[in-house]
Image (tube, rainbow, N blue to C red; front, top):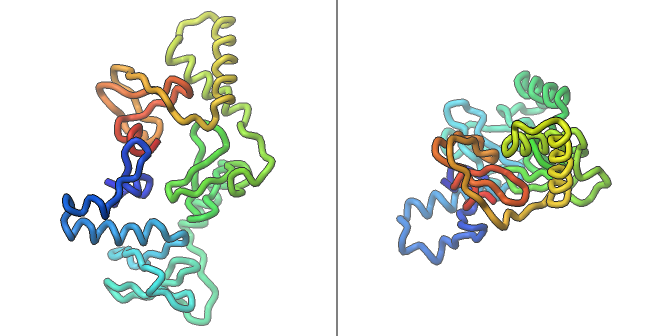
Length: 239
């Protein structure tokens, strides 16, 4: 999976990277070759892919010159600035689809990764964002993490998350008890905004992973500290 999903690269278990060189005896030459190719791709900050819709091959920096990338599969030439077809002597054209997404992002106050330019939406948690490419930045201003003075949490998002947690564990409380539980949950979330997930509990029954958003029919893991729900793959490979 790590050579398909960038968020799982490099391959790891319990936060510890699995060294490929030390395990080559168990791997085929073809798999190691694919791994090395992905290693180059995923470590490239400003990635360029062939603009041909039937190709979309990643183009390594070795095949880029004067802001033009030459695809080694189909030989099409792609502008590294706008990621569209090469346009000699002309300004980069504006892609209608991209501009529509950026307008939607601005309207919904989504943020863009400062490293790979992906658009990201904060579903829950504090303003510390970690992109699929590994970059860490502030969701409010987009600056590199720990270089700005923005608040750690947006108050409304903190309360909303606390409401979700309390609703899972005690959905039938009277209003007074519910408010106290929400306040306590909010304080705990704020205190552990960079939770290392030291202890997990198993919650039986159908649930949804809050990291990969996949539904799991039998059980889910819940962090005993921050209460995030994670499937087995995310618990051992993403956190």
